[in-house]
Image (cartoon, one colour):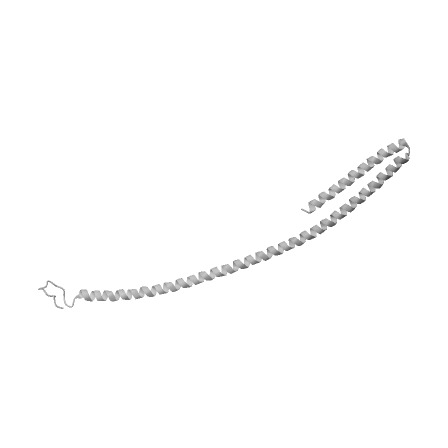
Length: 166
């Protein structure tokens, strides 16, 4: 190696190590850039795979959610249909029970009416005013008790009917 030109004040040796060092440094920088680029590609590939896995998980979750929603809807539809059928059966039973109660009450009224007619006839015939009056009071008490019993029976039937149909 020789020294630079002292006349120009350049004391750098020839060949100039600065130029060689810069060239070598630029080569190494290029090599580092290549390594970084390769690492970025690898990281990008890994990130892509992870994102695909996450996307798959979301897709599977959506499918499970849809299946659960469909199963819930089907179960609700079946329960509503069953409830509707049960209500229809209950309404039919209520109608039958109401008809039966109405029939029994009508029979009770008819019997009471016949009894009242009999009493009227006896009064019209004048069957012994003393005995008739006493019998009438007794009969009226019995009739009143019968009416009260019938009303109590009807009221009990309505209460039982209402209690079972709530």
